[in-house]
Figure 1 (cartoon, rainbow, N blue to C red):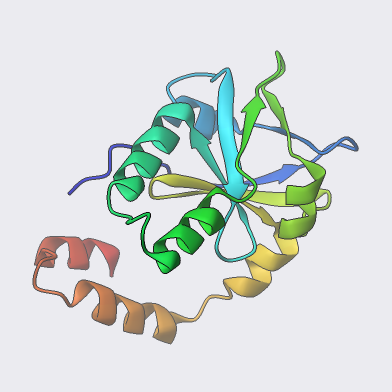
Figure 2 (spheres, rainbow, N blue to C red):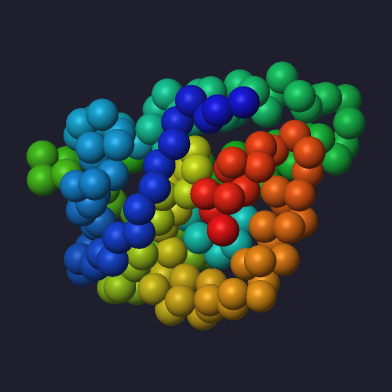
Length: 162
């Protein structure tokens, strides 16, 4: 199934002294223009995740429909997913103010990387991004084999990614 929302691109950005991030023009274009509101929350690998309101609604609705509120592991997962969820207003200069608690979680200082990653937009500390994603051709090849080796993925897609 093709994701309804798809973002790509890697953008080097800077936070101002107040913790505001100007949205990269390339992502604004992918969002369909300057949004008035975005949703932010904690990511899995020490980054933050940013969503349009529509993308957040689709993602959480699909997930909620799969979780069982009578199962303690499902409830705990829902808490992790929703922990730190914050609605952000986009100001007239195209900036969002990242909450301090989320900045601390992700280790954000001045230099950040904004990365479109499938249906999510990630915000990383530049150091964590560069250190966590050191390029390893062998690892990349192994991941391609492991993930795309599944018969449900077309050979053409695998060739495009190699």
